Amino acid sequence: MAAIESTTRLIHFQSLLKPWVPTATAIRWRTRKPNIQRPIPDHYVKARYKAALQPIYPDPLVDMPWFKVCGNILTQKEDEEVGKYEELLAKQFYTRFADSQLIAILHENSFKAHEIIKIKQMLHGHNMQMVFGSRKIATMALANTEFEPVLRLHVGKTAYLCSKDLQVSKLLKFTKKMTSFVLLGGVVQGRLLTRNELQWCSTLPDINMLRAELCSILASSTSQLSQSLTYQQQQLARSLEQHVKQNDEISCVGDLQVSKLLKFTKKM
Image (cartoon, rainbow, N blue to C red):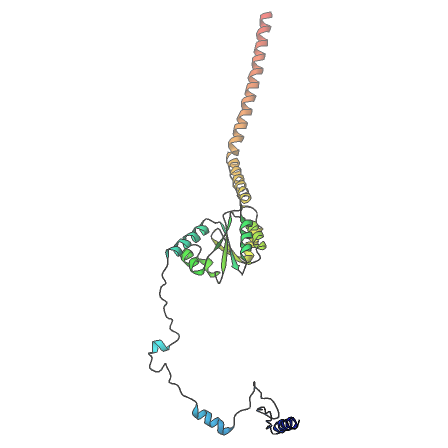
């Protein structure tokens, strides 16, 4: 028991002899936090040392010629090689434009694959087709052609709705149902029109009705001209016919009187 008591006392004594280590935290400022957005300027001496020790790098434009230093001179880009597949796409792009009487220019927003499938199903059977192409393909296909003004509106992602029939109202109805596309303008029989002009064209009557009205107007003028030219001849012919009829009646009356006289003389 004495040995146990001595060991416990020794352990307790060793625990008392352990050194005490205080916990310390580094604090930059005692009173307040540092202002990161508007820091306090450095001391004058420290600022002088920092300015003296700041490195000075050589100017890379010192030994260069003037035509490389001047930033206003435009560098000519090298001509990019055009592949056969791009030429084929450009030909298909132009043929679809040339075969269409009405073209709608649409800005293309992000859309999912099933949305374009629904659009193709909606346009099926109406002689309408969606045409997609990059800026490079569009310039290759439409440059130096009658459709070159369309390239002014081809900025970013642009799509085209080509129609072989001249039905502006039907095309505008379809574009309203296409929520992922924004109508910018259109081409009607080779003429570039704005969005408001397309809406005005949709209010116009059908071209066949206008042609029928024009034909009737032209036919009425020709009929009036022919009537005015033949009026005098018709009047002369009518007057001559009346004069002939009057002479025939007079001759008939004279013949009857002569026959009566002959009969009377025979009786005598």
